[in-house]
Image 1 (cartoon, one colour):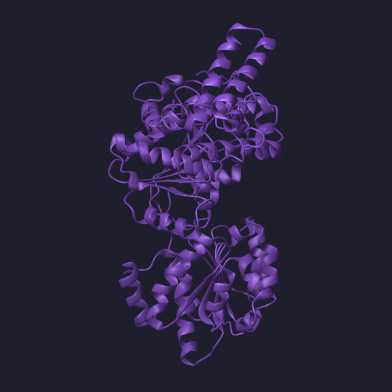
Image 2 (cartoon, rainbow, N blue to C red; image 1 turned 180 degrees about the horizontal axis):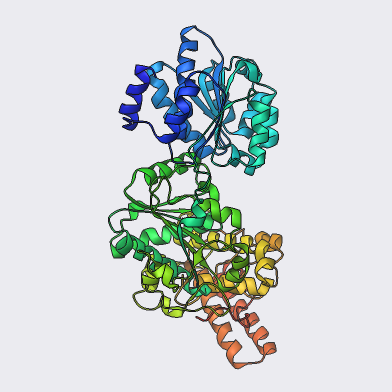
Length: 598
């Protein structure tokens, strides 16, 4: 190893000795041999392939060669950015430049950075093909390549990138004229087939994965709990509060996964406002999901990695590729599938560290997931084998009762009682809509970061996600909407003052028009802006209240007439805007199918 490299490792990363994969891979890789290396994420594998390619590139640059010297393919943008940062630390002292190209960034700006060539190019497959096909001079630059790295090859294949890898291979130097390093956590048949296509015959094989060692999902402590819709939020609260203040008070890192980006965003906002009540600083509540820009995601990921204490709310965007050290718990909320569950769980208990997993489900989800996850050691918190493990959620005060016919216990409505977090959640939400009850809960284009707007977008995303998954859990459209309404507006849970209003086009696209419980904006109301309050909305609220009283005391025909009269009065008092707002209450919430036991 060159002295400049050793100095960079010590000054940039604090490394004074090699990890197992580095010790196994470096001697052969530094000799220029092709290699298949099996190592798990978080074991130092990135350094293991960067050192040989940087040093080889430094000698090539000294010979004044142009073009691109090294190509590294990454399955995700986040991992690509991580590789770029580490490559700059190691390559900087050698004068080796690094450029990253990936989806979600400006392709023309990337093309300008590539115009003069670079030492190392880190790329995601799709964007790399875009440049091969569309960027002038790029194919010529690739002909100078001497090193090719496929990182997390199993993930590349899982994400469907095999056709892209084949296309890319046709535009780079042949295996005989380059060094190829293939790294993968697992070695399924597909990875071996790719290796046969891109490596020279008889590559070196190294592995630091014990072939007899059980994978993470078979040995890490895992618990499951079920809650009715209105108790989901307090259940999450109690689990997080227990983990951060009792189980791991001095150092914790939690990743909480939700089905949609908007749900992750909304819950991060809620807990950022609520957790300070128990001494958890809002600055350590982070969120990473597709609704954030690439730069925002990277900043949040960097903060999470370096912080001694942090909670990361996420959709699946962070489940693959990124290395988050020292994750003490992975929480998964809502439906998932077996593969996704395992990949998410793999964020904890890495490199010999302790960790645990927690699954939070609705009753109907639990019935489906029990079969999907059969064979995985997801215990009931009431199981003596689980309660014996320090940090069990059995100690989180969830008021658990054995499930009827299911493997995981039910956190009953008691979990949303005093001291369970519901009061803190309600304070954080602040009676969404302004606190006075005057404004509707709807997405606002003018204030997309308000709690009311976040609530409406999260509700819409929940409906959209579960519309596609309703059959899995046996819900009719009306039952699905009832669950959503209890989730968001049920007493003791999130406790929104009212069910959020959906845009007409959203309701139409989902095929939910006329479904009981759906609140749809009035025709011609302008697409879901608002939240401005004012006389029109105040009168609309009065109109709704009068209509509700009428429902309780008169027959259906009289109700219809009363609503018409009230709407007309509202129109006379406040104009057309009030009529539009009153008409937003087009589908009553009465008569919804019963859900939960709250």
